Image (tube, rainbow, N blue to C red; front, top):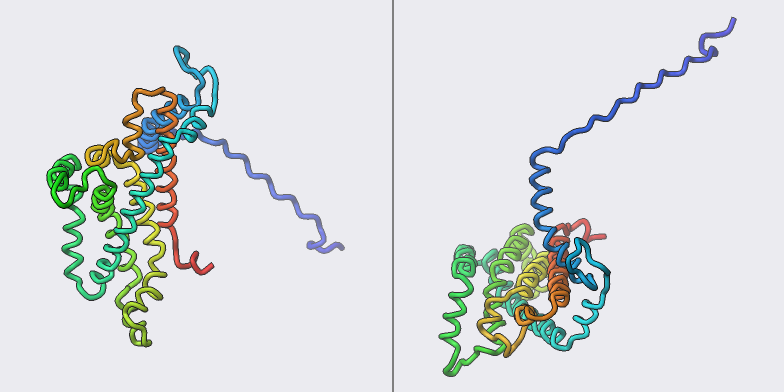
Length: 285
């Protein structure tokens, strides 16, 4: 007699397939999609106009071309304005790091009350409108021994105030997250001087925070227009001033310029957001 284990077992019955149910998107999804659509439509239209060889009465462009972008990057005036914007932004960021980073370290280690004053100070650029600040700077530096109006130096000093909130808050958060007080005490117990502990211990640990502050501040500085137009204008034509002066040119050329500026700002913002996801685990790899 065959054992029960040797008998063939019946195959399990296949589960009936569940029919997929169509679910309507939630109200939050619809609102988010509507906002993204409103934000994307002008950019898509500008990009289409920058790539169109001709776009008149038709709904879609009659042809696509890269001629407008090639003409833009072959224009010496645009390249000079782009270089000036980079020069001013890099100078302002270098000045910001040289002044704000030591202040942030001292505020988190030796002088905690300094952090309160800095939190109040970084609100000033948002409290005073740029037009009001520009008029005051024109009255102050238009003549006399410090005649800075029309020179790149006044833009560097002004852009420093724009980068101050983003730079200080990012650096202060990075220092607070790494418990800089204990690291400084441990380094000094091992025989390191305060300067040596700062450059060899603190600075490498806040590298991600420094990069975030630089990218985010640069994305704001490269698109600044009010101060550049009122304080220097065409005497030191930056990228935004050049864009304003080219309003009477071809719409395709201007659209290519707008898309180029938007792409540069988007890449810098993406780099800053990418550095925000930087973790010590990833750094050790």
